[in-house]
Image 1 (tube, helix red, strand yellow):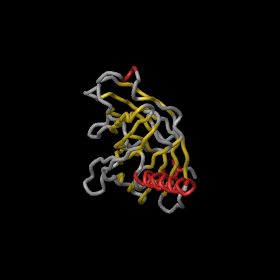
Image 2 (cartoon, helix red, strand yellow):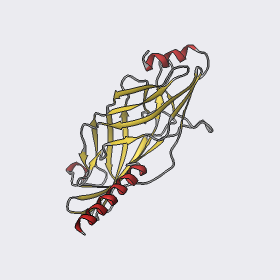
Image 3 (spheres, helix red, strand yellow):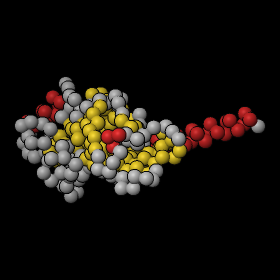
Image 4 (cartoon, helix red, strand yellow):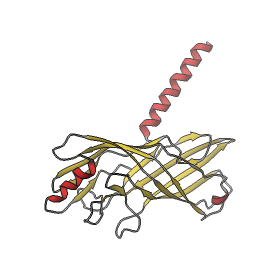
Length: 237
């Protein structure tokens, strides 16, 4: 049985559907790259599981990985983003994998295509320094074949999936990049109206905060660089 059909079976049970998502704590991270491209990482990982409580029982979406970006756009020295307030729309393809756990069914791994559309706006007031902030907004992130998507910003009472990317020029061909997104999601199971993900305590819509790259990845990368440096030092001794 496909994940979509299994989820649709839940609609046969009476009662409301409540969607719950675990929100991540605010955090910051950064990476040094030879360009200022967005998206600038090989993959992103959604914070701990999305929780959906339906009349048929709890539904979990876990181990979500977003990767396979088909294109990127340079933010610094981009003629379309040179001036304060200028903005562009960047569209690209991607892949999302994860595990869907439905009531009374074994975990079902999935891999789907996910078209993405991101609005990027220059919010750099001081255009002469080497720090360049950009406001970002996810306009579209659909999981093709699954009834889960990023919540459109026009939905009343639900915030847009906003974020920010800050690019610092370190020198010729080197950029330090900090980035995060607050991603609002919703479950779409017609004929019900789309229902936004909400906090399990307050019932209010909440985003999943995605920090790029995740701090754990930075720690592993740092450890690898340290070991590589030690190995080179031994060889040169």
